Amino acid sequence: MNGPLVTVGVPVYRGHDMVAATLECVRTQTYTNIDVLISVDAADETTAEACRPFLADRRFRMAIQPARLGWAGNTDWTMRHRRGEFYIYQQHDDTVSPDYVASLVAAAKRWPEASILFSEMELRGPRTVMFRDPSLVGDRATRGFTYLERLNTSMFRGLMRGSALEATAGLRISEFDSFGSDMALMAELALAGEFRFVEGPVYLKNIHGKNLQLKFGTWPEATKRAAWASFGAWMMEIFVPIGASPDERWHLFDTVLERFLVARGLRNWRGARWLFSKGRRMEAAADANRSPTLRLLDGLRRSGHIDGWIRRRSRFMLCDIDNRDAAGREALLRDILARLRGGGRFDPAILDASWSSIEARAVGRFAGG
Image 1: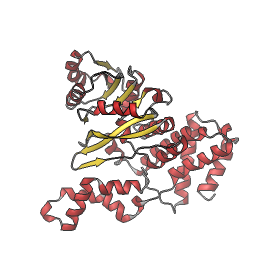
Image 2: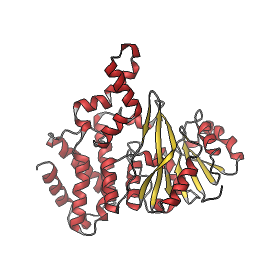
Image 3: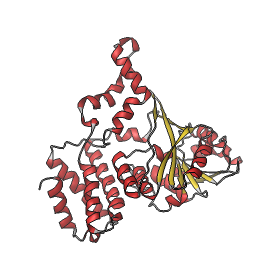
C-alpha cells in the first residue's frame, strides 16, 4: 500500500508471554508501509528472544536497552528514534483491528491540521467496555483548556504526527512510575493541533491484572497526592508560558491550579462514585444472586454508557480532594509549587513575580491564607 511511512513503537519489558500476539497483529496490518521499532528494556533477554522471529521481516527492528528506562523512558526512546512521518505507540500486551493503521493514515490526509488521529478503544478483561472519546477541535486555547479538564488518554494510542511530536518535550519521568507523563504529552499535542476521532478501527486493550494504571489505584493516599502534585507541576510548565502577557499567564496559572486543587463533578457524589467503582464488584457475584435492577445496571456499565456519562460530567482526580479541607488543599498547593520550582524549567519572571510572592498569592487564593 502506498502512503507515508508509519513508525510503530513497541516498548516492552517482561512481556515474553504476550508480545508475540501484538507483533503478529502489527505484522499483518493491511497498511504495509510500516517501520516497527521494538525496544526491550533492561536487557530482558527472555522477551528479546520472543521478539527475534519477527526480525525476519525487514520492516521490524529491535533495540535492547542495557539499563532500565521504565515505561515512559522506553516509550520516549521509540518516539525519538522513529523514522516515519507518523508514530503509533503500541503497547506490547494489546492488539488493534487489521485496518487500524490504514484507517488512521487515511484520516490524517482528511484532517491535515490534526496532531493525533485516534479510534474507539475496547477494554477487555473482567468486563468489556467501549470508550469513544470525542474529537478535540477549536482554537489552540480551547483545545488546551478542554484537554486540561478531560485528561483522557485513549488518543495516546492513536496516530501521532511527527511534526507535532517535535514540538513537545516528550514523555517526562518521575519517581511515581512517571504517572501523568502520557497526559502531559497529550496536553502539549492538544496545543499543537486537533485530536480527531476516527470511526471504524479499534484499539483492543487487555486488562489482565498487571497493567500499570491498575497499580496507581493501589497506592497509599500520600503517594497519590505526591504523584498528583508532580503531574500538576508538569502541567503548569506546559500551560502557563503560552500566555501572551503577564495577565494572561496569571490567568493560566490560576486555571491549572484550580484544576488540580478543586474537585468537581459526579464522581464526588457518593452514589455516582459507588456506581463507577464499587459497583463493578458486582461482576464477582453469580448472576443468580443479582436483583433485576443490579443486572440492568451491570449491563449498562458493560455497554460503556454509564462510565462515559460519568466521565463526561466529572473531573479525574488521582487523590481524594475534599473541597472543605483548606489545610489539605494548602499542603497540596505548596507541594505543586515546590515541585514546579525544583524542576528548574519554570521562570517566575514570566509572571513578573518572585517565588515567594507567587506562593503567597496562590495560598491566599486557593487556601484562604
